[in-house]
Image (cartoon, rainbow over all chains, first blue to last red; front, side, top):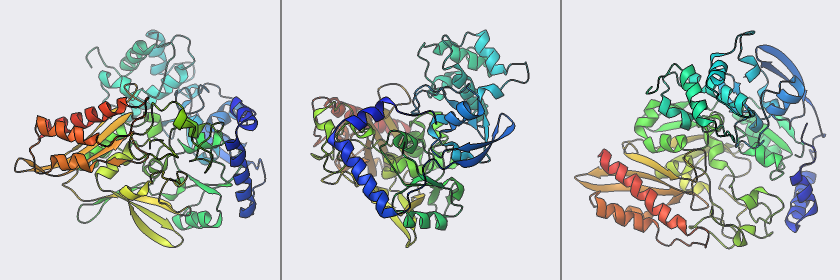
Length: 197
Length: 326
């Protein structure tokens, strides 16, 4: 797992009576349950990632995002906030757009996952990728793979999409560069919508 | 994150047996709330029971017109019949979270999500809800997002769900199951006020699983709406919201439900606002009186006094929308 020690665990370990009590009560509860699991027990999970079946051995705590990035080696889905607020980790799960940071890999045995790396056909870009390039739908690019995957998911959910609905239905993807107008235009173009569509 | 044993039962019986056998178990469905709580060390289950293999994802209309929504139906649910019978529910769902989160979040999990109080979510701060008796950092902290109704000296957090506010306004029940059998809990009794025991968040016993939400038969519910005020146009929790259902006959309101979100530790029914509507025409003066009544008995703090005006505004807007539809 790529988590390790973070700022929060350092603070929680070093501070407050509250945190100390929390640890105490949890240990007591674990002891009475008498079924403490062996730490780091790995589980076998079979995922179909971008059309290829992958068998992974995962710690049950591993997020789908970490499994894709660290074990499958696909870094297109980004770890922006790791708490479901930014949308940079968006992937398609059985065709529906979801946040891969908010789900555990172990829960997806047999599921199909599409990341941004799976959108193109060989060397031919997906129409959504091409539209983002043509209309300058990005600046720094960090949110872009999440934006593109989310937009592909949006068109699958709503074939009758109207231009005016795009901002609301893309609200799960933040862009700190605020390239929103061009992102909207790229999605509208890929959807075949005109100025007043 | 502490480690846990992961299980994915295939039947409800198997799932509730696991919950009965493992007092330290948590249920995971969509995971959109629980995964962050696990990651931040707020929840430390010994076992995680993944209920996604149980089905429970159907919308079934009952003889007589009631509808049962499976606990694992996702919040992205798109059912035109539900939208016609209960507009307030569909509007509340669409006002919640983002499309990606709605594709995963479930009805059962939405009702049982934890509060978004930053002092609850950061283990370095004291929180009675997380650790009974530890104290409440919010009382002396930033209270801009906190409750103006139903608080206690032990907790002032708000319940974050939009869906639950709509379900309360529709007099919904949750169906729950354990190894002892099944029972029905009115949504009005599902969430608890903090009082002296803010850590007891809801009426579900720890080995019980929500299997469905049941909405009573119409037509009450068909004339309804949901209005939500938040810090930005989309993808934010409510600062204040209103679910309004009215039944107008002979030019006057015969029956109504006015429920508020984002302002109390549970979805908050305003019987005072309902009283202000009863037997009266839905005109400007009556709407204003109902909006005033909805703010009555608010207990504000310096940072959240603005919520009184927001409550007034969302109730007025919801009722005005309903009047224009009549």
